[in-house]
Length: 204
Image 1 (tube, helix red, strand yellow):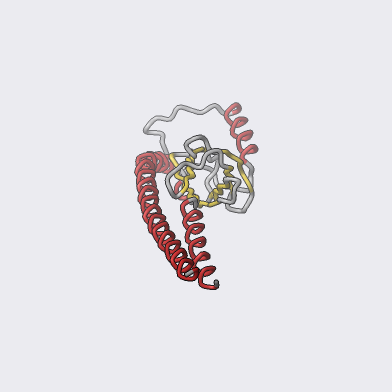
Image 2: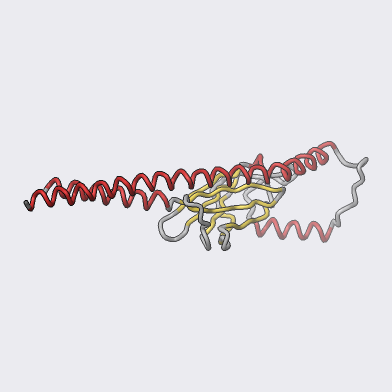
């Protein structure tokens, strides 16, 4: 009886481990200029639809609450330069987080000073109304502004490549998980076979 229970427990452990492993959630984010794009997906490759996204600033304050779309994606525009900790929660026990470093954002963004997104938006709107943007010529651009423009242009070119690499990693990870799940299923059937064989021998 003890052997039968032991074999059965192994079968159930393998089954549930594979089930949980296959549904582990992944999260990544990347910046294209001021826009930060977020994507959540499960290990088998399916998107994390309608998942809750929380965005925190470097001092731990919650900045935004978002929801992913049918593709498991969403985005926001960064009003300042800081590290953003992004968390995803599907509501059924699956969660993950991703740290987007400030170095990935444009250098011409103002530094974070503990101001909330809504306050930044109001300040920006007021400044634009009071001081309309002036047309800059190539000769009047400062070295700092020129550097920021170049960095932003380079980042726009790199961002799709970064996204491509992350998607390839996700697909390879999904294939690897399927292989492991397949091995687990095989071992599960083998354990079930041993369980039945032991039971038949005992009855004889």
